[in-house]
Structure formats: C-alpha cells, structure tokens
Amino acid sequence: MRRFFINPAQIQEDIALITDQEARHISMALRLKPGNVIELFDGEGMIYQAEIAAIDKFRVTTKIVSRQHHQDEAPFLAVAQALIKGSKMDLIIQKATELGVSDLWPTINRHCAITSASSSQICRWQRISQESCKQCDRPTPMIVHAATPLPQLLGQTKEFSTKILLWESETTKSLHDIDLQSSERTLLLIGPEGGFSTQEADSAIDHGFLPVSLGTRMLRAETAAITGISIVQFLLGNLRRKPQEDSAAQRPALPKEAQ
Image (cartoon, rainbow, N blue to C red):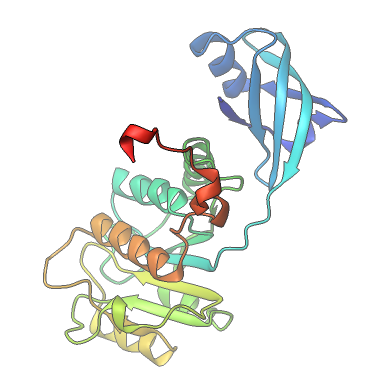
C-alpha cells in the first residue's frame, strides 16, 4: 500500500487533505484514482488508512476509514554525528532513519571539513528523514537538531544511561564489550572524516563516554556511522522481529511435500 505524509493540521474529523508535493506525486507520478486506499502518517505517531475521494494535481481529498496510534517502546538510540561533506551527510540521515535512530545531533568538531549548517540545511535533513519514513514503514521521523559545537553537546548528555565514542585510536575495546541490554537511553558519538582530536576524545571520556573501536579496517566516515548504528541497534535488540512475526502461528504452513 502506498504511504504518504499528512500534516496533522490538514485533518478535519474523517477528512484528510493532501497538498503540494505529495499531491503532485499521487496524481501525476503514481496516477492514483478515487477509490484507491492509501496509508497516511502524521509524524506524531498516528497512522491512517484513507480512501481517495477526489483528486487533482494540486490537492487530494481522502476519507479516513481507520486510524491507529503507534507507540514505540524500543530502546532509545540517539546519534551525535560530526558534520561531513556533501551528500555523505544526506546518506547518514537517510540510513539512521531507516535503522530506527530517534534523534540526531550534527556536531561541529575540530577536524570537520565544514563548520556550520544553516537552518535551511537542518530543515532539508528533516525532510530527508520524513521521506525515508515512507520506505521503512516508520511512523515518526528521526528528529534532526541544530548543529552544535562538540564541547557544548558533551555538557548536555547527562540524560543518557550509556554513552559510546567510536574512536579510531581505541585498540582494546569493541562494541561487543559493552553491555547494552539494560540501557534505556544510548548516545553514539561519531567523528568526521579527519577523526576526533585527542583533546576531543579525552573530553568525551571525561563526560562518561566509553571509547570503542570498529576493528582494524579504515572506514570512511559515512561507512563508520552506518556500521556503528547497525551494530548498536542489534545489541540493543532493536533489529529483532516483533513477537507475533516470529510466532509459528503467524507463518503459513508448508506444503507437505516441502516438509
């Protein structure tokens, strides 16, 4: 079923109005028709099944036939990602959303190739996260915060029960050495192309971050980010299937000749 974002302000009782880019996509690219049923999400946890009632290239009027509130109870993972160049940051935003990261703080580090991100750039990254939700069936987009100097961010991390520093100079500990099973709020700190300075790493450790290595391979910044997020989500249990999906009762029976 096709999935689209709906602004909560555009929902009045059982009528949801889709406008602008989403309306053009529905009418001109997908050529959906009245009577087609689509799924809508409002970015605040509500998911709607809606039937298209009227359509043109500027607006699509739908009638909501069912609604459900999604409550995410997975362990919370946030990421502090140093600013990196060009489309690499876009890729990290997209993949972090798909992998279930709750919040992302772009950070300004000593070795960053770029040292600022405008409000329009933050809004663009938020839109990328929103678009990624369509593909990964996520009800709420990842929150992309304003770019923050690393020293300032380190002083604002007391709320996290586990804080992890991906550091290329760490030689003894890996992610598998950290017990994440009981962690309620985890923050993963990832550096830029030039890595962390020794002073930055020491400061992070002083603020309670646990330094870990991703191994002996030299990874690009965006590869390290996606790899680190994936491993942490696995260790947190956030990549498991839901219980009902694992249940044998939910699986179709195999034909006798295949058993």
